Length: 168
Image (tube, rainbow, N blue to C red):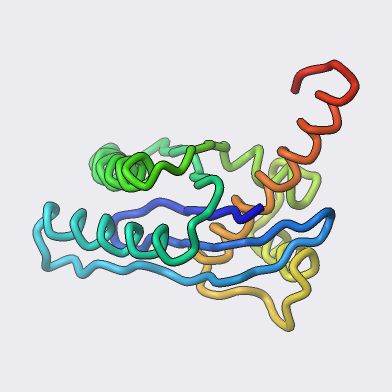
């Protein structure tokens, strides 16, 4: 199974492509799509859309997993990131790739086993789980890897429960 994880943003979008074979996880690619603040919002959204469309075509993931938004202060940022998420969801829909969403709490719980883990703890676990030589950078790409790992673990658990006649 090929999973594409996304850490949404308007200035920086973290992306990760993870391959799951049995219990093994392997990072195929990770990085960021960046936009400059001097561009108009529509131009920034187009750059994000085009970048994600290209990645979806190149890797043909079976699922796109995106972190749900959580903002408690800056409403303007929340609206702008919400617009960026919209073009990401559109790109996935047009590529025929199903979308799953997880909260930051769910991601941390699945990766570290602790829902309020610090960013460094998450990055260390991502490094270990993927057999990377160093903590993944930048933070946005590391977060996207964590989102993909969350889905890999959740999908595995869901499959185990379904075999026993239970639902997640």
